[in-house]
Length: 218
Image (cartoon, rainbow, N blue to C red; front, top):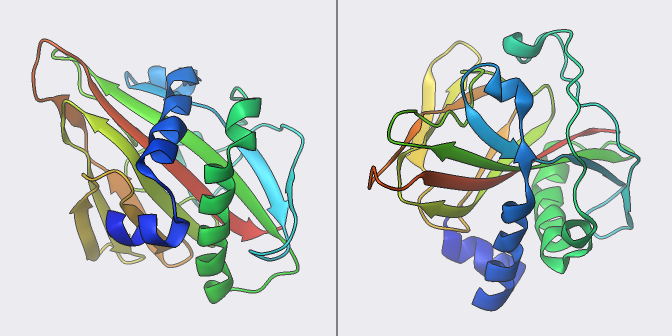
């Protein structure tokens, strides 16, 4: 979804978007990615709602676990991440994004309730080290809908998003380059990965800020 379409659907101003992006300055190191040599910052939280227009409830914090047949790098690993900040949870922009994504999720399935997992990510790369947005490589998340919303890119090249069908045939290859660009996929039928990022100017680090949100039956 092009950035202009996303902005129109969310009905947000440039100031609101800039304020939303500041939450990425409060992310914490992903120690599990660091074990693979990747510098990635993140937080994690869960919501529940029954319909895109219905009540939305923040759920208690739990470890992040993916089904055994989804992400081969983290089989049997309960990953513990810092929770979303109170200001991020309260930001109307987040609620607007979740409701927009909920419309796509209900086009794929209509469970009694949705479990929504929210992951703000920052990939970081320096001149002597690539940033790995997906150190696990090609994978699925074990959900119904998977989405990636570009919030910001600074001094970054690379970061190409690729989507494949279950047989490994390429479906989409694109670089989320404009803030607000949104990539959505039916995770039951596809696999995805993101290529490394590198600094355009090697004297400064590269940053790629995205909001990854998934929907699965609650």
